[in-house]
Image (cartoon, rainbow over all chains, first blue to last red; front, side, top):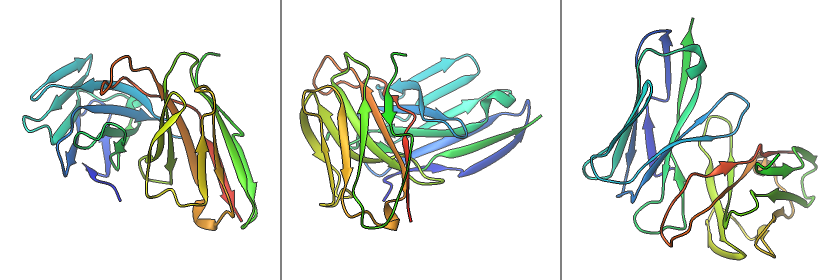
Length: 112
Length: 117
């Protein structure tokens, strides 16, 4: 089963509202990646975080990696209808670099 | 188109039949992953190749599943004696990593949707 959990599972927001999804791992992550999957599409890479406590921004998106490297978050400011999709966090658990685990995902719906 | 391609895009088969999927990664990428994704779930790791070597195989991958990457380029995933529970989207992804233990973004293909009747 999934060893990387995400909450919430679903989020419905009005366009212009903010959105946050949280990713929690049972073990330390050497790094974490975030992907977006549009309905009917395939996952598309957004960003990678490597350092403990790292924060990265991409326009309206802010990504954080926890100090213990067991959790991460993605925050979207002022959502737009183009943000609709499912957001996944993913990474290798522990130091087994060959296994890559995806979270359960947060499905975002934005109402215009 | 220089992205990851997968064939076929859709496959409908009867229970007990064998199926084979193909993945053509981005040409210079040395890492190739296979995932399985069911509705409402994240991609589940199946197996991973570094060049032609299969370095990891999930326990989810029963002995009915086999994957190859014979020349370190394209890869095939075969499922023998398919079961209804095998119905899912099978995704392939590739990446380029120049250092051991380094990670780069994975580029996903469009997937092969398998339906087992």
